[in-house]
Image (cartoon, rainbow, N blue to C red; front, top):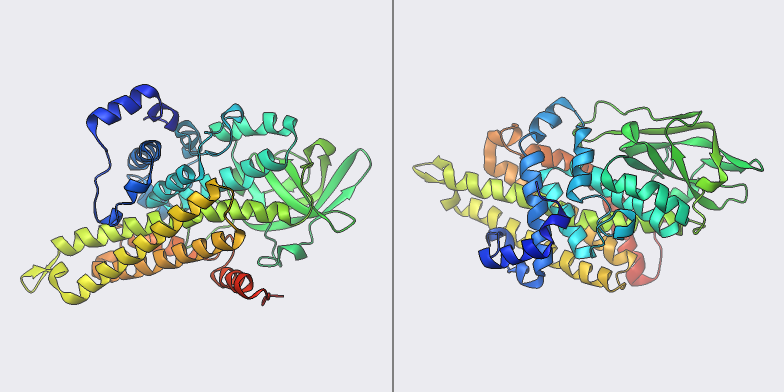
Length: 411
């Protein structure tokens, strides 16, 4: 299995130039978006695509059926370079651009949204704030272990009574002179039951939001798992409970104060979701197209019927529109021009599109669409979570509304 670093070596690039593109231009690249990508982008995408085909796709239906999170995948993600791809190499990251990051998330989510959640939480919600807002000592201590998959991380923002309104959080960070004490709880936290480290957001005595790094094993810190999920069954989700947890002062992120910290992390994660959901849609579309060409009714493939062609044509149209939006967002992100509102629009559009594609694909598959023989129902159930987390569908709509009118409708 080749890592991203392997495929970007001069030798690998020369071999690729001799062999031609390894990506088959098909219906899922209807507007030749590869023409907008660099050779490096295409090599990175192919590396992750190969990884997913080998490590995730053969096993994902069983993992989902059993509600099993394969902990060994964390190390494998680290080996292939899927954790923190935009983090500088000196800290263990890939030093890649944001289009590369998006393509990585797209290919991982073609495999499964839960797998992508694991990777995007690690990179965007744990590694990003430590790199962006942490001290040099914090970067050196945590980032290499997170990048390699030696450690798994999680992000604590959502609370039992505060989801779309994170500023109302009640988790408290109290100054005790030579240390802080953390009290409160976070809910719906991806990776938490297995995480070695958590980036947690809490209010101090002045009501200011601060970020702290909490390590497994600290007294009073527990991570109960949430069971009986019908969505994201191959990922692990839980709570973070803090009962008088003693936090060393060196574990506070020193370079951020206020809600800007966690919201900037969410922007990074939402960017990845905007690309990732396209991967889930592509997987559903490709399965539906193949099935419609093979399945016969009334003596001919169901793909020959007008209503089936309408479904397929609308699917590829919406996928293509989302691909173009994601690519343009990646360009803006690379240039430092992407706004939070633009990222919200792309996240909302991609996930809504993917969920609609999954529903239409289920119709094309008929009764077989609800079985584990095909990926459709798993993607559909996963996307019901993706459309809610990192900002709900409606909240993102209101973010766009506030941006274009200058009036906030959710306060």
